[in-house]
Each structure stands twice: as structure tokens, then as C-alpha cells.
Image 1: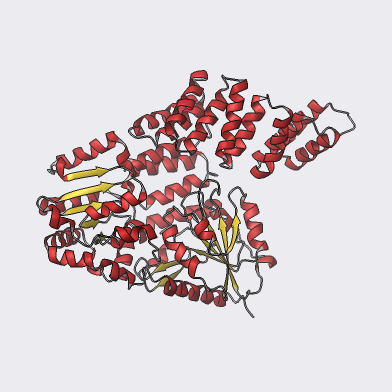
Image 2 (image 1 turned 135 degrees about the vertical axis):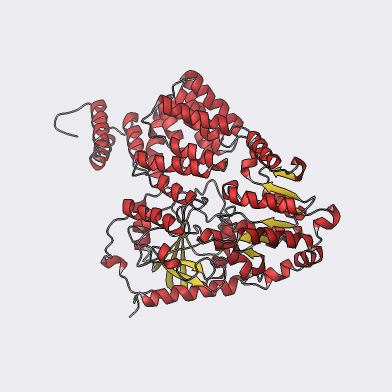
Amino acid sequence: MSETMLTLEQAVELAQQQAAQGHIAQAEQLLQQILQLQNTYAPAWHQLGILYAQTNHLTLSLNPLQQAVALQATNPYYQNDLGNVLLSLKHLEQAKVCFETALHYKADFAVALHNLGSVYYHQAQFGEAEKYVRAALAVEPQYAKAHYTLGVILSEVEDSLDIAFDEFQQVLKLAPQTNLPIYQGLAKISAKKAQVETALAYFYQAFQQDKNDKSALSNFLFTLNYSTNYTAAQIFAYHQQFSQHFEKEIKLNAEVKHKLHKPLRIGYVSEDLRNTHPVAYFIKSILAHHDKHKFKIYCYALHNPNGHSSEEFKAFNHTWINCFDWSDEQLIQQIKQDEIDILVDLMGHTGANRLLVFAQKPAPIQISYLGYPNTTGLKSIDYRITDIYVSPPGAEQYSSEQLIRLPFAYHCYTPLKETVELFKPSLPAVENGFITFASFNKHEKISDPILQLWVEILLQVPHSRLLIQNASMNDAHFKQTFIDYWVQKGIDSTRIELQKTIPFLEYMRLYQQVDICLDSYPYNGGTTTCHALWMGVPVISLCGETQVSRMGLSILSTVGLAELVAFEADDYVKKAVELATDREFLQNLRAGMRERLQNSMLLNAKAFTQQIELEYLRVAKLACLDE
């Protein structure tokens, strides 16, 4: 402590001031000095924990905050702050105890009420979540963050999208200069209601409000893929903005110019290395079949280990690094320390991506693959793995990365074992007496132009029905608006069946009711197309110029069904109508679909992985890493 002989209270206040001014190291040193003099002084432990939490060292903040609570268990603010960190780390039950304890000592503690509601939200107990957040607002009606959280909760509650939208708007009235991601909230609701252009406007507004908000720009770029109003050239130009705003000048330093390792070191970076994510259907087969004599695999897992199971991935016995609460700098240092030869991003502009890590070039060779069907826009990512179908000649001009084109679909599907017995080879139309079309894609993918084609198909196939299942159907008002659309187009409402979100195996059983799936456009189905084919259901797809609008072409060509792909709108309708009227062909197609897939590269995990490995070795050699 300084010679001015500050009191302990004054010293903690000084540390707070230093931290507020950005002098983190000095603040930490001062707090440590205080604790050396008096290690039972709770405010110092508390402030040290807050300091670590504010600098995103969440795990490190736990012990100081726990020490503070142990010394002053009746302090509701200490309980609340410890609960906040536990909540961030997804230790939900422990966080709940802290917030409940805080409320025991201060029943009208609006922040703790809000935070307890947040716990219930993360546990998907939306009714309880809403109750506690509304209780917080009853104590403090102008509590902007509580209005925001209520909007987030209601976004997940059936029939509440419009109310959620109003809550976000209320935040803007209460706190126009708020740092809360309000425009992103408004954008996500708009997207759920298939209002893609409105969602784009909100996402871009969020970015204009805060040019350091990487997630706002990433969400804008991702949502561009749903729009029919932008050309491939325009979409690429927007992706280049990400590089312009966030990518620094990269100069490889000595520590990343290491010699090629044998076996070659491959690092996968993803938030999606967990059993329930769609990416799991495609990366799992590669991780299972990597040649461990030629490759040493590192999995940098960004998801919260307390919220999602990754046991199937860990069973492959690769090097597993849990990076959930790491800063970008921590992750960069770990990648450099591991001397990764090829670093593979599996996220692109999805989720809580770490593209800013890749922007700093922690590995000599960097590749974008699988999770995002477009360019990242980053110059520091050297390659992007695609295929000859989604990236035809000329696609290079719309990619910041060099393209690695596989001769078949760029992903390999691994169906869940539980779905093997769900396949029914008989055609539903035989029993029903009518054809059932279906789409199980996210509603954001269902554009107005493709809807109009579906109308034409139903008009030309008498008595046929359309089954649509997606999360947007959880909202009754949206469902009714959507039914009204069909009625206005001359389609009786009894021919349209709308299904809300259901458990996965129930969702797969829905395919037992479906004769033909109609692909979305411009963003084709990927996982849903594979699910449909696995369940014996053919998919009619419309192909465009962007990668997302060519995924149907890629998958269907790989399984020998390129004839189901249309390149013009009229042909899309024609193919669907012709397939619907040829019941014998449709029945034979369904009966033989499983065997067709099992004999294709779409399910040939070993051969597919060998091809990926050949590309890894090729680009390593090109980089002249070995001597």
C-alpha cells in the first residue's frame, strides 16, 4: 500500500477508480496488497472478483467472490455478484441459490429478481423466468435491462412474438442510448416472422450504432443469405466489410512459422462440437475417421460444457480444449503454444464465432469449413472447403479465401442411430389417397418467391397437402397470418398443416407422413435435406447463383438424384408436379433411398475423411512448411 496510509476502504475505492480508468494491472496489484495485509477484508475480495469478471476472467473471479460471500453471507450484493458469474459459467443451480439467498436478505432487490429470472430462462423454464422478471419490473418499472430480458424470454414463448417486440421497443423509449443489443433482438423476431429485409435493417442498424459490435455485423451477413434481393457480388461486398472493420494487418511472426509437424497438427475451432447441434451430423464422421498416424487433432470447444453434452466427440480421443470462457487472446496463445499447422474454423458468421481470433493469424494455414455456407470475408483465412456443385467456375470472385473444391458434396452426413428403425418404405400417398408435400426448413429460408411456387404446385396437384414444421409456427398469430396467405391464394386451409417445434425423434417421424419435400430458396436446406433423404423422402430443389442456393444441387447430385434439381422456377414446379403424379416411380424411389444413400459419398465417412486429409496435406505442402 502507498505511504499515504490509506484506510482499507479508501484503498478498495482507489482500486475501483484504477480499474474504471483501464489500469487493470495496478488495480489487481493494489487489491492483492490489501489482502496480504488483511485477508478477511470482504470488500477487497469482492472487488477483486468483480475485476476478474469485468475482464472476462470468469473462472478466476469465482474464488474471490466466494471468499467475499463466506465472510459476509448476509450481503445480498455479494450473493448477487457471485450468482452473476455462476450464471455466466452456466452453473445454473448454484447461481439460483445465490440469487435466492440475495432475495432472502433483500426481497425487493430488483436486480436479483431479474437475474433469477435469467436462470430460469437458461433452464428453458420460461413461465418462471417471466414471473421473476415481471416481479423485478414491479419493483423498478423503468428497469431497462429487465424489459430487454423479458423481450428475450417472450421471444421463446408461444404466441408472444408481438409482445416481445413491444418490450424491446420499450427499452428504446427508456434508454435510447442503451448498450443492450435491442436492435438485434428486434431483428431476430423479424427473422422468425420471415421478415428478412426488416431483420437486415435492424441488424445493420445495430452495427451502425456500435461499429465494434462484431456479432451485429456477423448476424447481418448471415441473414443476407436468406434474402432474394441481393446478388452474389453484393453479398460478397458486404462480407468484405467485415475485413475492413475488424481485420488487422497480419504479419506472420517466428512462432507461427514453425516447421511442419509429423503427424500434421489440425485444430478445429467451434461452438458446435456438441451432440445436439446440426453441425454434429457432419463433423462427427470426420473426427471419427481421422488417421491418427498422419494427423494429431485438437478440438477447441467454445460451447459451455455445463449446458451441452460432448461425450460422443470426446470419445474420439483427440486433444480436447474447453475454451468456453476464454478471451480471444487466451485462445490465440493456446493455439500458438500447441503449434497448430492448420487451423479450421467451423462457424463462419454463425453463433458466438471467433473470427477475430483467425483475423490475428495464430496458425500458418487457416481454413473455413462446414458451419457457414459463404465466404468469411477475411484475408487471413487462406482456404475454404466447398465442392464443384456449390462453387462452380467463377465462384472465386465472390470469395476472400482460395477455394478447395471437393468432387462431391462438401459434407458427410452421419444419421443418428435412433433413426435407423424409423424408416417406412411404403408411400404415404398410397394409404392417404393424396400427395403430401412438406418443408421442415427454418421459416427464414422460405422466401416469397418460393412460396408462390408452392402455391402453383398445390394448384396443379389436386387434393395434395402441404405440411410445414418450424419454430415460427410456435406463434399462433403468425400461424393464422400464414394460413390467411394460402386462403388468399385460393388454397383451402384444410390442405395446409402447420406444426410447431417438437422433439427430434418426433420430428423425424413426421417424414413418415411425407411423400415429397419442397426445398427452400434462396437458402436451400442442408441438414433437413439429408434428414429427408435418410427417411426416404425425395427433395425437389431450386438452384441459384449463391452457395446457399446450390446446396440442394450438391447433396442431390452426390446421391445420384440431380434430376430433382431445377434451374428455373417453372421447372421447379414442373418437376414437383411430375414426381407427384408418378406414384410408382415415387414408391420405388422411396423404397430404395436408404440403399442409395449408403452407397454414396454422402454417407461414406472413411473415404470422405481421406479426401479431406489429402487436401490438408496438399495445402501444407504448398505452404512450404516442411523442408
